[in-house]
Amino acid sequence: MSRSATIVIENAYIAPVAGPEIPSGHIVVEGDRIARVGPGAPPAVPEGAERVDATGCLATPGLVNTHHHLYQWATQGMAPEGTLFEWLVTGYRLWAGVDAEVVWGAATAGLAWLAKSGCTTSADHHYVFPAGRGDLLAAEIEAAGRVGLRFHPCRGSMDRGSSQGGLPPDEVVEDLDGILAATEEAIRKYHDPSPGAMVRIAVAPCSPFSVSRELMTASAELARAHGVRLHTHIAETLDEEEHCAAQFGVRPVEYLERLGWLGPDVWLAHAVHLSDGDVRRLGETGTGVAHCPSSNGRLGAGIARVRDLLRAGAPVGLGVDGAASSELTPLAGEMRMAMLLQRARYGPRALTARQALELATLGGARCLGRDAELGSLEPGKLADIALWRLDGFHAAVDDPVVALVYGQTPPLARLLVGGRTVVEDGELRTVPEDAAAEAGVRARRRLLAAG
Image (tube, rainbow, N blue to C red; front, top):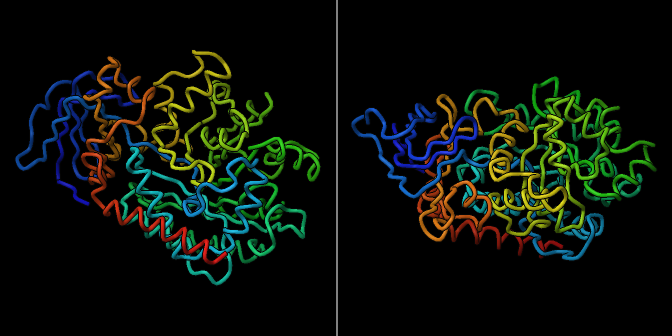
């Protein structure tokens, strides 16, 4: 993975997300930061700078993936017609066999796939920690470092097995004290609060139907004591709403609010089934939402109220979700899917191409608490930049942003993460693509053999 001291991108159509678009302009990168963005040619090019001719390319911020389960790369295609609960019951039986080698291989393949679709920052929600299987969080952090993406691993957890009224089998849950100790150790060992950090930890109990009230409350206290963010699944299906009503006597978002789980340091995965009051409270509290349109469609969960959440002022980003519920989904493709599903629900003006791009960039950065550094092309921000080739078939569409969002994902001319080249001419430059793909295949074989 290479990085020149100075990179000058020239002749690009620039969609900075924050600020007006530039039909033909330049971006100057110095070290890991954007130094200049402007129209026309740069006023001066330092001697020795790498010059990138971006004629025919659209420059956007790197995409931000706000929700994933990378280990699930090893179980793609399972329960292909199942509901969420049916799919989970099938999955838990297999996921009980995960170990550090499986997680490393699945994360390597999954993150490489994300990079090839323009992703520069990814969260991951890992919540299955069978005893004695190695340091699973370390395995995926190491994989992210090799692929070269900025990484937000969320230390997940489950403590309500089937014997306590939860959905997962008892063999894949942990005890409360062990979870809190392991989570605090992960924060101490891996979380980097410094500017430009490549790894930040979040605290992430899995979901209301797999986690006790005590774990939810203690997790929030732990996260806030250490200044890290909170993440969980919520309101993904009507089954979950019925479960919360039966177990807790309230709707899912009301349950979270009672436990102190709404606020600007929280982002929630899915949030499909929301009342008007839920939408209003998420907006009022600044609670973020990771919208995963392909996964919600694949599992028949429904269509999230993204238009309404945005109008209420809630931060909304995009996520591909676990690879086993959103097989081989490119993050760039989620812009199109989000736009189409909002239009299917609300009409053709519900979400524009530019709004979809903002969800995938600045909206995601807001969910992760990194919008001061990521999500737009502005001087001083991190040089996480995607250059999309739109000079082939995509050139038939005059508007480059429409061409990016409406159509099939175009190839990348360059993907920079902190000024380092991760993808060039459509190919990974950090790890061999064949090796990354094979790592995912080996992870699958190993996991299936363990089952």
